Image (cartoon, rainbow, N blue to C red; front, side, top):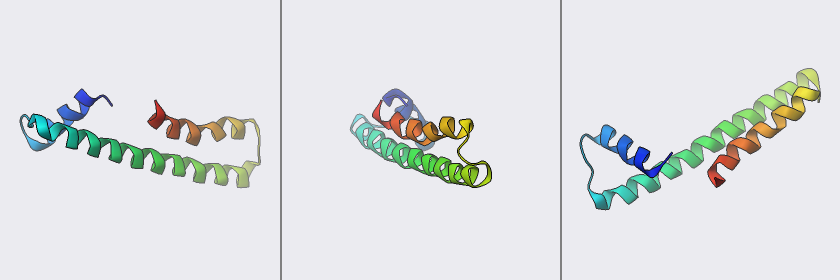
Length: 78
């Protein structure tokens, strides 16, 4: 998300324009929420991957799926 998108969502959520001094708080909060959400998604992938291994072993699909949690976590580094 861009900072402008975060500010737009905050305006939608809280009705109207937000004060300039409030923008940094909304941006910081949105970034914290995004970090937590990415980690939850990555953990879900890890869990599904463990289930896949128990059912099918480490096949070709496993190697592809192995990169999913890492890719989700890496989005925060972009």
